[in-house]
Length: 140
Ligand code: MN
Image (cartoon, rainbow, N blue to C red; front, side, top):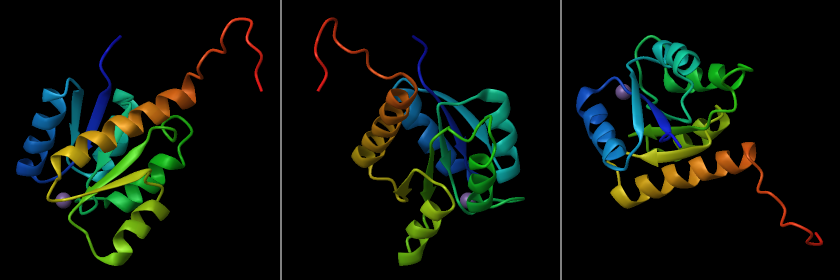
């Protein structure tokens, strides 16, 4: 089975390089978009399994881009994790309200980063591919 593909939407090259390194080391394929607008285009073209969304982005911010992604029938089911230095109390809430499925703060906690990504991918996988019921077993 092909490795999961993760779209990184990030305008800061240092942040992008770090996130790409962490993802590729863990065996994921990566795509890169540098603005909210490019992120939407690349989500359509690249059909990633997960999107990591910076929030402060040129052209279109991450909140707006997430809202547009989530309201698009073709790409709306792709999970979006906000990845941001916005750590004011309202920021997490605002990211979730925009449609983000999760939230990772910068600077990145390596363990939490890996855990959040694999948990989100597993959750969305099980949503699309329900586990088969055991043969002949009674289901309660
Ligand atoms: Mn940014």
